[in-house]
Length: 236
Image (cartoon, rainbow, N blue to C red; front, side, top):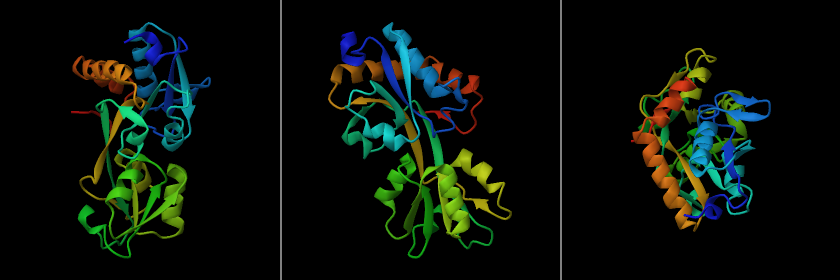
């Protein structure tokens, strides 16, 4: 692979999803994202021998919208079929359980009971798990909000039946709601991967090789440990 195929400007521009609090666990420090995905982008740039420029996005949907527009060279984002129409993804380097929270007194006891007529699910618009629910929910109704806090507020204020989310976030949400419960198991695991604009076969091959090595060498596990992230695990 020639350097121009992945970093045509001479700097690796990495799109970072700021709304994923597991991968950007430190938020912004002096305007620079801190966490597992920023560090992974730096490691990829170091392997290429070029500087890195982190390009923060407030949501994964906005990051995905810029695929192929010359704004970023790699995007660190949840790999979903809807996004794969414009982005080529590596295998996942990490994954996060997605499940449901139900309010006090709910008759819903299991994930299998959620997809029924009349059940309203609060969800963060265009999150990776929202895309999964859109493709797989057949009977329940998805009610979308902007951002994680927006989904929580929608769930509480509109007295919806279920809140969908990443298990680590739901663990903090359930603590605010006496009697609420998080359902056992998961409806999906969000696969965190590295993407590049569709059709760049040489760049994708390089990234696939890098991620495979990063998992087997312990790099990914080391970044998770460094940032003390709970609820994020190295993908199989």
